Amino acid sequence: MVLANSCRPLITLVMSGVLLLLMGIGPARAVPPDIFGVWDPDSVNVGGWQLDPDTGQLTALEPGVVSADPFQYKYELQCHLGGGDFDTPCLGRRLDCTNGPDGTDGFPVMWLKAPAGVQNPVWTIHSGPTCFYDPKPEDLLPRIAAMIQTEFQKLPIAAGTVTAQPSPHTLRGAETNFFAAAAEQQFDLTLLAQNVHVTAKPLQYTWNYGDGTSRGPQTAAGGPLPEDRWGERTLTSHVYTQTGDFSVALTTHFQGTYSVNGGPPLPIPGQGEFSSPPQTVSVWRSVTRNYADDCLRNAQGQGCPGVAAPAP
Image 1 (tube, one colour):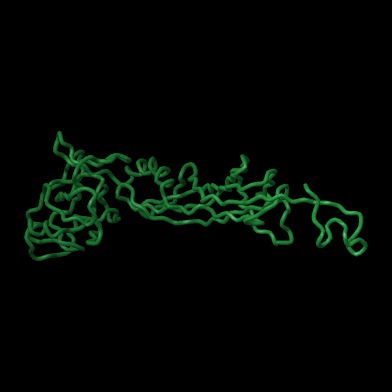
Image 2 (cartoon, rainbow, N blue to C red):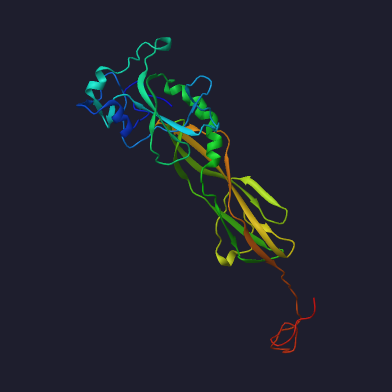
């Protein structure tokens, strides 16, 4: 959790009714000049904190750690009434958090708690006022960078869709054309209470044709063919040597970038792999025979209407 140390707003806090009861509602004025940031009453600073049972201190959770604490916590700026308003009498007696550890300045806050896992809970006072000292925003970037690849793979990215030509039936020994359709996608998420924007762009494709053969990863997604060209070989086509039903699966490899709090886009290392639901293709047998004459000369010839084909 980061509290802005300059005019650039990074984290927003929210007031609660129980905090007003504690402080008392008095005349309000705008945010004092020595407190920077934008205090948005519609946003809540929750989660990411746990109570150390040994020290009684609230500490930030490490990435990927799930707290066993039965409560969730949030902090609110002392004397905050919501929006950009503050309680003037309270400001006159608020906690002095200047010249803290290593000479840094902090912010006076109240800590609230609510049952863990409850959405939109009723918050109660946990402790405070106390001084809050937190790392500079840039200190969080390495932690976010260490998390971003795992979080990227968790995103609900829509994998590419598969189309086969011909479909749903094709012929043994013939080229079956497969092609993929995938789109660039955008996501917004929160990591360590920072706003992270992610762009996912399809980059490569891996085909599993269901008969034990695969192709890729390759950059070619393939494309549709007009019906009079079905059977032509393409960069993504496949020839089945056996008849039967085969499940064709496509894995789309996405390359991602992310930006933190509106900063410059940064590359996400590696790729995210997302698979589409398998598509069943039925492979039929085709039989070709040559005949010496035509049906006009010999109406009873093989291949003529009404004449049964010989046993295979």
